[in-house]
Length: 240
Image 1 (tube, helix red, strand yellow):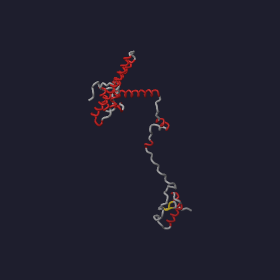
Image 2 (cartoon, rainbow, N blue to C red):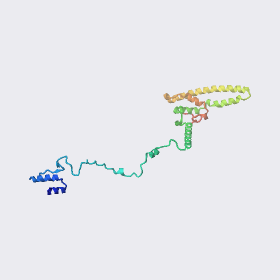
Image 3 (cartoon, helix red, strand yellow):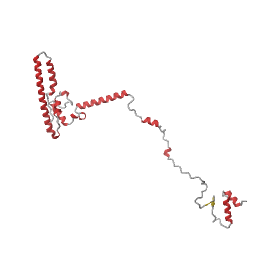
Image 4 (cartoon, rainbow, N blue to C red):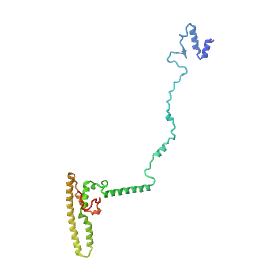
């Protein structure tokens, strides 16, 4: 039969065995202050005691907070992989190959014309290696200012060919001798030109002088109008 103390304990949620033990303790003359509190069969000071409402479950780990920027809307849909690959593709050639070919030819033609104009004007950027440098520029000016026998070779040969077709045997014979004599004079003039130009270059540039004999003779054998780069000085206006 339960006592009134046990019934009140049951109402408060305390097990009956705990209440009975407490009653026995109180009945034996002990004080409530010295009575050890037993909760769930364990002492209150026991480190293994369970806290009320904790149960047997382990506390769940705290979930990390999601930053506000991650949840903010971007304003547009994320592109798929197929869409990104399509956006990164670049055509190797343009769609209209005829138009691209025409543009390429036009560009090459313009570049070629610019190079030819620069070469004719003596621009160092467009000159080949054999024509570059201040020494070659001086040789060209010297040869162009001089009247060389070599630049008359083509007109003289054309005249002799015309005379050879005439029905006069003496004319053919004399024209042949005249042509051979002229060739000899051209050789002598070329030798003198090579010696003169190389001497002036050596005096002007000293140890840095280049060999320009063949360059001077080659230009001297060409007609003035056919020389490249074009002559930049007038006749008998020799460089200093």
